Length: 108
Image (cartoon, rainbow, N blue to C red; front, side):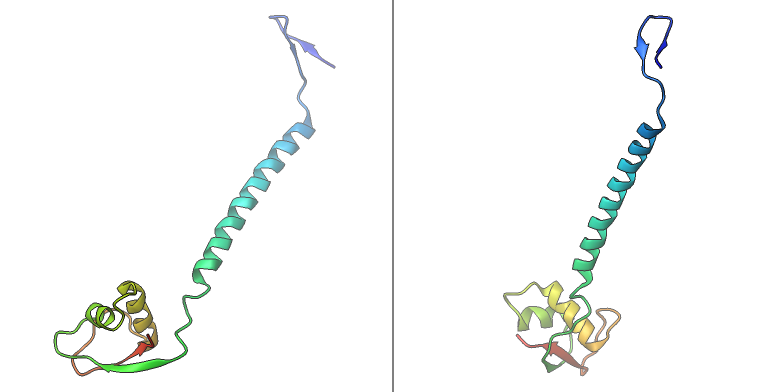
């Protein structure tokens, strides 16, 4: 059944099935976005908690920082990644270290 408006255009009546289809499209789009976010999060956290298989020990010299140790031991690697690994191996909550402290460092 079509309704004729005052300006003589024919309009379609409201249909419940159209609303359901529109709502389903939004739900599917939201589910897809959430799946992509979840996949990215899972990929990002997959290797974060695993320390390297083998490690060596280094004694911290006066004036040493984690950045200096990482740069000296791993000249071709990104120091930030190595600092993170050293912090994980030694269960450090931050970059604070003291002279004379023995630190586990990942193999080259």
